[in-house]
Image (cartoon, rainbow, N blue to C red; front, side):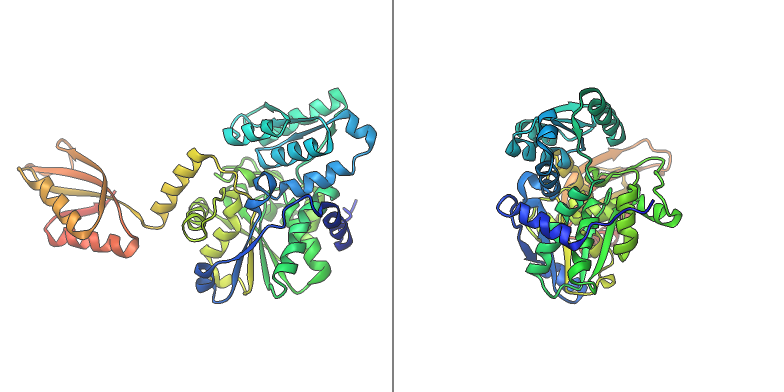
Length: 404
């Protein structure tokens, strides 16, 4: 059975429904990305949407079209966080009771925010698949209407309004880059774009550790991944559905993947250069542009899909991103075992302008010659060029250096 695709008229109807309900999020030019790409690059800031992500758009459209009898039964959803918050806020605005099942690993701020919007948030299972099963079981037991995060035309049409706004804000856009998990956002955006500007190239971006679309497209049917492993919990989806697979197959030009270092580098880039707080999933489109800027014809619009990041994860990812960007340097040095050797190492590092974060002193390693000690240092540098300058300075001072 062939899935019926969402049309441009469907997205236009959703946009009319959302008028005055959602924020028309800004489109911000990124000079730093433009310099890499060789033409204009803009960021569509859905991290500034109500609930901190685009998910509110689809959730509101879906709930607003429930019958009075369905609303009386309440709704149930499953989510790692962003869909949960979108459903919770839409339900509160429309006077509907909402229960949301979330994985036990869901970031605490997302759980707290979901409850803050008035939903009954319950933790169930180790991953989103288990939470989805719990939500479906709850719907069967109670009669609540299950609100799928992406497998419904109303949800897809609502998410597609992001594309409608992009075309209005950047009429000359040539390439539109969209983060992709289950495919609801890119399906809706592609539907909106194809109806108005079929010449625009639409690129879906998945985390390499949760990239279900390439295999599913090759097989011609949804093929579940054996497992997902990515820091980008918002797009950690094990398989598309028939509906989203059909949209991506027919409407999306390319599916690309990004690694964990790409994601952490993009998150750090958004924080430092764009002054945007973005979650790893929300930075996926930016990660793709940073990883291979020559692959995207400008003007480019990258959708920054969400900003609901756990502060603990933010700290870890920023550190990882700094390491990936060459801002952290880990070195081992063999130095003479005599007074003043460590001070001499630190003096060279100070002269080179490196900030010492950690120092360890090892005397007993079997790889050391008699009369040597090993010094392990973690340094903060200004980037790869500065790191090379630091290493060169240590070697000129006579120290044997290797990266740890």
